[in-house]
Structure formats: structure tokens, C-alpha cells
Length: 324
Image (cartoon, rainbow, N blue to C red; front, side, top):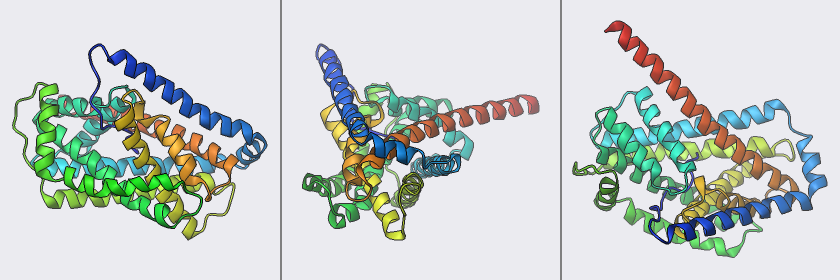
């Protein structure tokens, strides 16, 4: 994943319970919107579900897995730009293990995990955290850029999505190395790491952005594989679907980061946003089914990656123990 909403700092103190309650209420309401759409168009939903084969779902799943793999390579490129080039398996282990933290309410946990897991492998915590901060900002910026075609050219989209265009100049400022250096200072204090942050190279940011653009294309492919059984997917439709997913992810990210900190991995925000961005591209009933299947497959892809890197890490440690 895509990674979901990771931009907010967890709320602590006496108001924490209120935010958790409000967050849970929103998630339930948002999921209720999806469920009501499924119920309203149940006949269309069941007809669409009958069109799927195991091959369709497997294709969508593989595309999701490859998309998440591209995001890990983006994070690794940023870490390399900060002076710490990890072996591929080690970098994947840190990244995908830490990404499970996005499913925990309070969105700072992936950064905390990256800092601590990185430190165990010789990477200063502030460097790993800064790579994570820069990564999520680049993810947001590329998501909005890829979402522009759906925003400007697609029909049937709520005009209020236009605010997403304002994110581009804001993220361009936030993603500047001088700004991320200051942002990571907050992460360093939270993780009790005192190593000064450095600035990633512009080349590493460019390489990471290219990996993220590939990730969006693969996510679009995953979505297209879910849409193809219920309607024809042309090249133009593929572009619309890719743009719709990127826009929905970006809007869901901003919404979850700004409005509530209790929505794990942007749960609820992304689903409602994706329903809206698919309006006019996919029929209402099948669209609701596609939204649910997409969330399930992306979550499973996160779990598969975490399990795979854990197994690879154990095998690597076993080989080192034998050779030692």
C-alpha cells in the first residue's frame, strides 16, 4: 500500500478517549455508507460477485503485492540518500514490519517502528524516521499528481474533491529536506533518539518518486483487475481507475490525518473516497463490491509481505549462525 494514513501524532492525555470515540464513530459511519451501498444495490452486487474467478482475484492480489514492493524500494532509496544503504532483504524487513503499525490507532507507530527496527540494524533512529516522514510525504504528493486526471477530466466527481489540488504546493514545501529535518526532530524526541537528522539527496527523492509512480500504476492494475469482470476496461478506463485510486488514497490520507487519529490505515476515509472517485467510472453496485475487495486484498498483501520478510530474516539469521 498502499500504507494508509500515517500523518498524525497520537493524542495523549485527558482528550485521548474522546478522539478514540469520535474516530471509532466515524469509521463505523463510513463503513455504514459502504454497507448501505451494498445493500441498496444488492442484486447488482451479487451479480457482479458471481462474475469473479479465482484468477481475477489472484491477479488483483499480485498487483497489490508488487505495488507494495515498489513502495518499499522507494523507502530504501530515501534511506540510501541519507547515507545508509541496507541490503534488500534487510530494508524490506524493516519497512514491511513497521508498516503493520499503521493498523494501530495513533498514526505515528510506523515511524516509531522504523526508527527502532532500523537502530537494531545499525541505522540511527532519526535517519530511519526521516526516511519514513519523507516517504509518506512523497507518497501523498505523487498520489495527488496521479489523481489530477480524475480530478480535472473525469465526470461524476464531487466538486469538493478540488481541494486536493491545494495539497500539491503544500507537500512540495513539506517534502523539502530542510523541512523534513525539522519534522523528524519530533519523531526523534518521541523515540528518544538524539542523533541529528541529515537531509536526503535530491537524487534519492527523484528515484523514490519514480518507484512510487510505479506503485500507483500497479495499484491501478489491481483495481482494474477487480473491475474487469463486471465491465470492459480500456486503456482510458485503466488511467481513470489508477487516477481514481490515487486520488481516493490521498484524500483519505489527508482526512484521516487531519480529522481523526483513530482510523487504522485510513479505514473508512479511503473507502468513502474511493466510492466517490469511482462514481461515473464503475456502476454503483459493482463499485461498492470493488471497494470492499480492494481493501481486503491490500490488507492481505501487507500481511503477506510482513510474513515473507519475517521468514526471510529468520533464514538469513540461520545462515549467518551456521557460517559463524
